[in-house]
Structure formats: structure tokens, C-alpha cells
Image 1: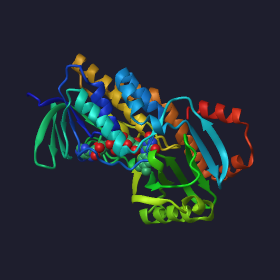
Image 2: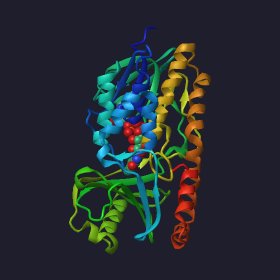
Image 3: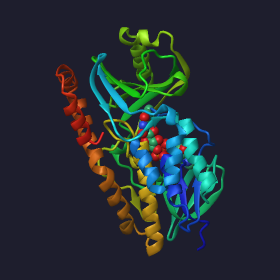
Image 4: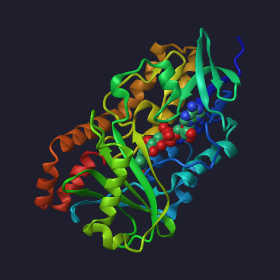
Length: 382
Ligand SMILES: Cc1cc2nc3c(=O)[nH]c(=O)nc-3n(C[C@H](O)[C@H](O)[C@H](O)COP(=O)(O)OP(=O)(O)OC[C@H]3O[C@@H](n4cnc5c(N)ncnc54)[C@H](O)[C@@H]3O)c2cc1C
């Protein structure tokens, strides 16, 4: 049976674009199907981690340079973690990174795929259904059209259709962290180059202020979801964020600030354990494979690395003419070897601080030498 495409990538976020870029020039007919039309927004903290740049450089020096130059003016090299306005940690990292609105950053990546690869792009094309045939998949879209592909890559985010249709659901697959964000202009006391994360006594969750260009900032709040509790409902989280910005600790900084656009929320598919993320003729990348770092909430870098490693696996599959689930596990092994250890450490830390929140107070009460903080962060590869 003739297929329409060797590879169908579903979703054009960081994972899908990295996969398409890494497949460029490998002699495969690749198509990318995206639900939205770019530029499109994505709810995020907009902090593009240093490791995301490494992933792009691993594909191409030129594309790495283009990504670096794209938002150089909002370079971020430090994080300050506060407990009730007191700085608990300050950490300066070495890898280059910046903050960029996802509307802009994702469009940059998508344009790179559009302008510099042979990928055939379909926008406004939500995948609806996948039918498994012996030697290919038939993908059907909301507009009634369908295509046949030898291999499917699920890069369609936290509510992945590919995952839901090709992998038996696991109760632990729900997105365990809920977060909201809004853009603000004119917040006072923002330090250039610094991202701020705040923990507030009596408030479960964490609050962030990440500076953007032109005096804008991404302000958000995240909380761990608990079963049978209303505390993580969008209305409640919204109230908490409003309460924080109006509290005596922050009211001064927000007094001249204006909210830009809507306050919006989304779930974070954090890493909890190694799980099945591939099978006969398919692979999952990024959020669809639950690769968000549990302690820090970043997932752009892991999404891009998974796209790169998926592309390597795809090339091996075509070279060996082997698309079996067994052969495909090479992807899981390589990916988990690269990022599994780090994500497991983060999950341990997240559970430790969620279970024993007083630890924050203990750490806050002890003034640790900066050298020890740097060593700890480096050891944890933060
Ligand atoms: C509130 C919040 C704050 C965050 N902050 C940060 C941060 O500061 N730094 C960081 O690194 N990470 C952050 N993350 C995580 C980060 O946003 C994700 O890990 C990252 O976007 C994953 O990339 P992806 O390509 O896997 O998925 P996505 O970026 O979600 O891209 C998926 C793409 O697939 C498309 N799609 C979906 N369904 C279909 C379909 N049926 N058919 C076709 N296309 C489809 C979507 O339109 C989208 O373009 C945050 C997440 C949240 C929710």
C-alpha cells in the first residue's frame, strides 16, 4: 500500500518543530499537521530554558544561532526564589537562555520549519482519529480529510489525541499541576536578567514573575492538584493570584501595573515516572509524553530534545525497515537516558516540598552559603 507520507508529525509546538527540523534532508517525505494557524498563543511562563538552545544547536549551528539571536534582549541568567519576600536562593546559571512570549517563540520555530525545510505543512488541521492498519496509520482530520502515513509522531501537547488513541489510558496520566498566567505591564522592582519565584506562607503553590521585553512580564501561579478538592479549580486559582497581587507584600509593586489580555489556565503534564511513549509505528514527544520537569515546570527543552531523539529513531527505523514496537523502544531508552535521571530527581524534590512544606521555612530560616547553593543547583542540574 502506497502511503501519502513517510512521517506525519501531529502538532507544531516546540516538540513537533524540533522533530521536523531534525528530519530535514534525510530523504523522507514529512508532513506536519497543526490544529491552529500561526501565530498562535500557548499558555506558558515564557522562560525558554538553556537546554532548549542546546537541542537546537544539536540539529544545526545556523538554526541554533538564529534561535539565540531571536530574543537576545530578554536574556535571563538568574533566578531568585523568595519565601515571604525574603530571598531564599539566588542562582546564576551559565547556559544562555531568555524569556519570550510563546506567541513569538513558537512562530519563530514554525517559520524555521516552513522556510528552511521540505516539510509539508498543514495548518487549521486538527487530528480527530487514527485508524491502525497493518503497514500504516490512517489519520482523519476534523475537516473530513484523511491521509496515510507509515509512521506517526504525537507532538500534540498535554491533551494528545495520538496518545489517547494509541496508548491504553493510565489513571496516573492526568495533568497533576494546574497553573494560570496573565501578562502585566508596569510592575515595579523587576530586576533585569532575573526570573522571580515566590512561595508565600499559608498559600499552597508558587507564584512567578518573569520579565519580558517592553516592560511586560509573565505573571503566574501554579498549584498541585489534589483529588476530591476544589482548591485547584480555575476560579479558585484565579482568586489566589488576584489575592497575591493585591496583598500588602505585592500591592506596591502592582499599583501602577495593568493587566494585558486575559488570565488563562492550563494543566502541566509533569513527569512522574518512566512510561510507555512509543509502539508500532508511533512515538510521543513533549507534553504528550509527560516530560515537564515536576519541580520547575519547564518543558520546552525536554519537548525539543524528545523531538530530536525521535527524529534519530525515525531515521533508524527507515534504514532498518523496522517499525516494530520492540525496535521503537530505542527511542524511550535514549530519551530516558538523557533526561530521565534529572526528571526523577525533580519529581523527588517536588514530592518532598509538597509533603513537607515546612522545609521551605527551614531553608528560609538558615542562611546557606552561596557556594553551597551553587553546588546544590549544579548537582541537581537546575
Ligand atoms: C502555565 C504554564 C507555564 C509553563 N511555563 C513554562 C516555562 O516557563 N518554561 C518551559 O520550558 N515550559 C513551561 N511550561 C511547559 C511548556 O509550555 C510545555 O512543556 C511545552 O509547550 C511542550 O511543548 P509541546 O510541543 O510538547 O506541546 P505544545 O507546546 O502544547 O504544542 C502542541 C501543538 O499541538 C497542536 N495540537 C494540539 N492538538 C492537536 C490536534 N488534535 N491536531 C493537530 N495539532 C494539535 C497545538 O495547537 C500545539 O501547537 C509551562 C506550561 C504551563 C501550562
